[in-house]
Image 1 (cartoon, rainbow, N blue to C red):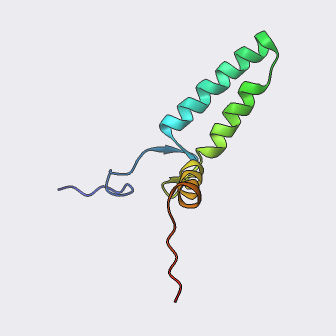
Image 2 (image 1 turned 120 degrees about the horizontal axis):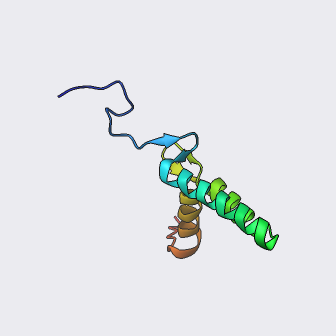
Amino acid sequence: MKTYIYPQNLKAASRLWLWSIKDFLIICIGLILSVVILTQIWTFIPFGITAMFAFLSIRMEETTIMDYIFCAFKFFVTSQQLFYWR
């Protein structure tokens, strides 16, 4: 078996700056659609949605901010907490 000088021996996911390639493409398409909508309807709401997605999909050490928020919501709201008093 060959060993490559690439993170995790060619098993790492490809990334572009702070985002995965899929997220970066979604952000670029969102920006293009936001510009088209801005020129036709004169609203900045699509820019806000695209910026919010770009912020929430920043990937640091294989975890996104959106994953962290989902795990925190699950821990604090939907999962049962057990406390044992001794």
